[in-house]
Image (cartoon, rainbow, N blue to C red; front, top):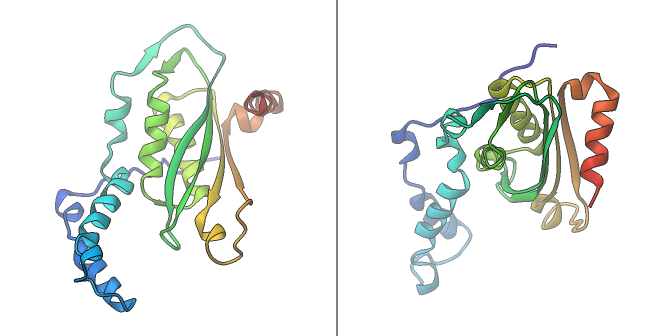
Length: 200
């Protein structure tokens, strides 16, 4: 099955530098607040700074993350990095969702520096996202750059758009997975991965 390459959109500097603070001022006014009162004077600028950080993945070049971190080695077994903590923002309500991601690949005589996997996760998490796309993007990115026998990604997350509004279910969590190559085609490989990430 042909799959699209992981989306790696990088904003041009002029796009990334468009001011956000004036829109926050307008939003505060529309909410009935006084943007000129002491406690809110710097809020638009603080929100802009926070949003720049929380969406910094749009300016992240995945190729630079991976650069010089793929190593030739005689190894054809599974590599797993468990419990990669992440924070992202739901594109529907711009509220946070957060959780843990478990990433595995079945090596084909090449491995990637272990710290690069959390960096890849952050690059895609720090965008406006939905969990399903985030899961697929991380898996496809590793497949594209490393060309392993397969990739498995499982994400467990809690969404503020479900916890703070709407159904208001604070204890609910959402689990998504992406299985590529051997992880999709071989039940034993998939079962081994799922069993290993369940272990404490």
